[in-house]
Every structure is written in C-alpha cells, then in structure tokens.
Length: 552
Image (cartoon, rainbow, N blue to C red; front, side):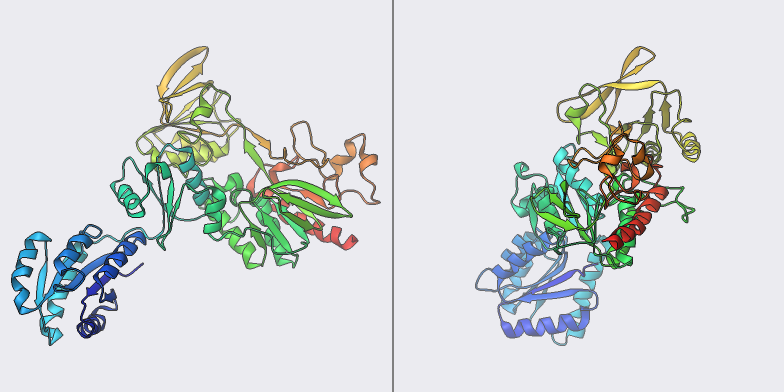
C-alpha cells in the first residue's frame, strides 16, 4: 500500500531543508515526505498525486511566497484533497493572515517560525493533526480504474478483457459514482471519450481498443523467435496444459490466445469436481496457476492475437496472425475450444454487452446487485453462474426447454441450486424476445406451453450449446458434420483417407489429417467436454509432438 504524503512548501530553501529534515526524522516510517520551494510545482504535484491515486495527509505551507500566498495555495490544493490537514508556517507579522485563513480555507493550525526544538513545537502539533486525519482515512483503490456507462458494450468489453486476464481493476459507473466525474475532470475527458482506463502511474487511455490496452499492460506484440518447435493456438485448459508440458520438456513453445487464457473454463465461478481441489476452485484461479506455471518454464505467450490462417510448406507450418505477421513452426496444436451459440430471439443482439451476456457472469456480477437475472442454459456453466450470481441478484431464473436440469447438469450442482432460495428453475420455457429502452435490457418475453408472458429482467446470461471455433481454418482439415476436428483413428473411417494420408504410420491419437497438426480439448471430435480431460489431452499432445519431431 502506498504511504500517505506529507507535502512541505516553503520558498526559503534553508527553511525547507530544515522542516523536511525534521519531518523525515519523525514520520518517514509511515508517511512519504515531499518538499518543494515552488508553489506552482507543488500544485502540479498535487494533481499528479491525484491521478496516481495517492493521498496527501497533510500540507505544511509557508504563508509568504513570491508565486502565491500560502492560503491561496491551500485554497487551490484542497479541491483535490479536501480531507488533508492544512498547517500554515508563519512569521509573527503574518499571524492575522493565519487567523483569517482558519475560516477562509478551513485551516487546521498555524505554526510560527522558528519551531525549534521540534520535539516541543512541531511534532506535538503534527502528531495531533495526523492522528485526527487517520480516523477518517480510507486508502484509495491502488490499481487500474475503468470509467464508463454500465450498459455500454465497449465498457463491458474492457472489463471482460481485464477480468479474464486477471488484472484487478475498479469499475466506476459514470452515472452513479461521484468520484468517476472527479477523475474525468482531472484527466480533462468528456463523456464522448468514455470508457477510459486510468492507471497507477497517472496515465489515462481514452476509449482504447483491446489491442491498445494489451500493449499498455505489457503483452507481447510480436513473436520473438524465427522458428518454434510447437505453436499452440488457444489458451484454454488444454492449450495451457500443452504449454506447461512443452516448456518443461525443452520445446521452443509459443502459446497464442485471441482473448484471454482460460477459455470458457476460465470464466467459471466455481469448478468443484476438479481432481485435487476438494473445496473447488474458480476458473480464474486455475488459469492463473497454469499460465504462471507455463511462463516459469520459459514459454512465449502472445495475446490478444488471433491466428487467421495456417499454411504448410515443406513440412513447416506458417501461421498468419490478424495483424498480418507470420509465425513459423514445426508443429501446431489447435486448442481453440468452442463458442456459445447465439440465442435466436428477437431483440437479443440489440442488447449484447448492455444487459445480455454470453458467459462472463463474474465480470458483471456486481452490476446485478438486487436485480432480476435470467440465465438460459442447463449445463454446468449455467449452473455455476446461477449459484455465483445468487449472491448478488434479488432473484435468479434458469430458463431451460426441458422439464428440469437432471439430463444436462451434474447432480452436485442441482443439489446446490435446490438449496438456494432465490434461484428458480423455469422448465419447458424459452426466451422469445428481449426488450429495453434502446440502451439496456429491461424485460424478456418468455414462452411456456404455448403461452407468452413478459417479465422484468435486468440481465440475461446465455449458455446454450456450443459450436467449435474452427471457421477460421482454411486448411483442408477433416471435420465432422458439426465442425469438430477429426483426429487419430477416426480419420481412417473417411473414404478419401488413402488420398490424404501418405505416411507409413497411422495418425497419432490426437493428430489431424495433416501430419504435425494436432487438435486437443473441446475443439476435437469425440472430446469429453470436461476440464480434466482437456488438460489430459493437452499434456498427451506433447508426447506425440516429440514423436513427430523425431521423424524429421
């Protein structure tokens, strides 16, 4: 935590050195002492401290200065730190001005020069001021702050990116948070600039793109190596496992993720059936452990970067990224997972990111406080979100087309849901229309047994089915009728198998129809759709990579 600041200001350099010495001698353990001879410089510092979310506890200011009087300085400075204690240093002739300042700037005390000895004339006064200040002091949030409109898709995109990438931040709704307006004024931004992202060092980004934000946060923008042993596309549980094992076994490994590590599992509020964690763990916790472990083994991580094409040339694989750059590798693992299907209901897309969300319940949970929340979907992800959101929402409704959840959700989750009073399962029901004022969601039309009814709804979270993220692949990889990538022995079932497979050996278990390109996790046909199985496949793939590389 940052230390509160004591700011000393006096145009007499000798006096300033003396007071700074005395202040540091007594208070440096708990406070940062900052001093200057320039009132203009001090005011600039005050604004800078405010931008950096630092706190000034006490001003100790000389009255007679050539740039401005001490009381005038305090009048300007208190606008930024109104709760700071204000002490004026005065000569005997300035006593009347100091007394007047008690009313004009709410002066807390004035000290006559000289203050020797400080043990008798300075420290007792400052001690009393700081003790009084500490009673009402609450440390400001020391981190990234995001300011915007709650129901802005752009605000949601930034919050979701920061949350998914495990960056702590404070969300500030400009329509409800008074401090948000103060920060906007401080950075001289208007509503047209929203959302803005304010950093600890005082920098502020106006309506940044995700790419701009990622660079500012220190993400790698380009691949460092000319050639990799393996490039992993997708940083879900399977891709992360491949990265950990690839790095630990000495392969030159690059992991590329278009959004954030963790995939759909990363947004899960609680995974309770993962081996070795009897109390469960969040998807973010699992992701944080995995990405930290992979980086410790020296893997390279590119995000947010999207692979848009794969080419094969002389047994090498050439990946084209969304920025046009290319990456060369000897082998590839496709672990791009699945996307939630879009809900085909009137008006839903009008409120995407403004009350309607696909997954990402953790990002918007705070905004659901005492609200009516609906969840569409009967799988484990929907159930985990319902349990998590029930801690915030007034009521949570799970909408499913089937009679109940027994055929699609794990029994441990069903038992949890049944025990939570503010969760209701609406069986044989579907959402047919989303309504609002054009800015954010306010209601839904539900269809049950042929009858429609309109309900109040402040948020809708959608977890319906999934489709593999394979549309981007132009390379002729074999996929089943649903778009999942075929691998291993399943390839031999296709009539044209002899035409595309020319090696003497059979395809490795997780190898696609193109030698050296593998698929693991949910994107693969026949996958188990469990976190543990995805991790297992990711680690297995590295074994096959070794065997493939040994052939060449």
